[in-house]
Length: 584
Image (cartoon, rainbow, N blue to C red; front, side, top):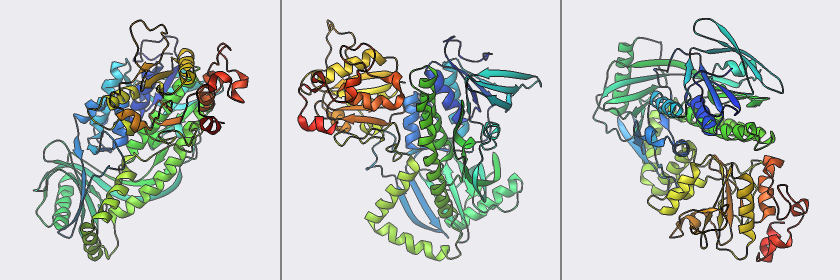
């Protein structure tokens, strides 16, 4: 049964049911629909959330939103934050400024934006693809077999529907019905009770930084919204639950004591006292069903990682599921979702546990020790910069890589390391090469970038063969000399050039003449080398299964078996012996 609000296009394309219309489910639905799948998106809530749990969109997520084509709408609604300032018992300890010198990005800041605003931007983008949210439709149970999933859906009027779909993605939060139906346990421990509030605040503090405030016995945080005079407040020791007026008074007293200046907190727009947990599932994929975001892991909000991690997961899953569903890759590609993301989830639990300890800092000696420690940090420049980069590196998502993934094929002669972010090479603003790569990363396909200035026709033949065989899911581009295409070019399958008049992009990608990089649809480097051959490219695409085979010269659509054993004469013309040896 097709959704009345699903995309009307692609009547014969595979279907996916996405459960949960928060930022994670919206991202998954958007990317699946952008790749031509028919998406049905349901959520048991009566309508969009009115409360905002997450408020920080970190740089790597902004890069992802850029690839999705929605970043401008998100940036227009948020405030760019480039600093973290610490106070204790009335004294300013230190201001840590954003330092991304070792992590090039077009977005060297975290964006402070209410989760409700982020969701609104994603819903609008999804609507442009013809997909809407079915509110009040609740998943109550599911069963699956080798051919598909049968989901029982309950509608607002109480009627039940049996919906059959080939694939299901559960993005339905910490109390996920999908996770429970799949029998996936949340492993971990309970943790602390904190309070959140969005409220107007009267203060003389400049709203150009996040504030961490220690009273001498406990810590609070203040995060400025774009809306003038409005802040997100966090209390790590909230005490008993009370009404809005009492919450405003308690926040006012605590912040005034920690900052050493009068602060008046007005009536909160909303408050929430919650006990968070540090738990995750042992796997994120069961047959034809998947989980992402809070459905797969719950943890402390200390470093603002929950929504950001969930968006990354949804984007990681969507392109893999789309390729498998459309028959462009084998089922082994779907296994890499959990293989890549479960270790990240485990690391996240550890890092948020540390962040929780540092944020709440309940040690009785904190009031005495903090001024001493941070006076030292403030006055020692190299130490301060090291701390800034360490903290930002963990929060930003820019250092996350997939070097150990089955999809990563390392070669000592490649440019960027396997598993690293290709977006780092597009960080320079105003440069034609950076802009060209940024546009290329918005393509839903894989990207093969070849430096066309090398000797011989080896790379040209491999690039053309790949373009002819897999143009539906592989974009083949060239940089360097010899990339121009005239109006009378005899080969319509010739790879299109990327603009790079000054060679900035080639240098950023680490491409020497003849070198190449293979970039995944999520913008991570999968493989590369010093010389593009059919054999090298076949090895890089092998994890996708036999459907991704690269045709060899004179052997039709299949891969020449001999080419997987040793490079043939056609593949070795003009390639230096040391390069051939490295690719064996």
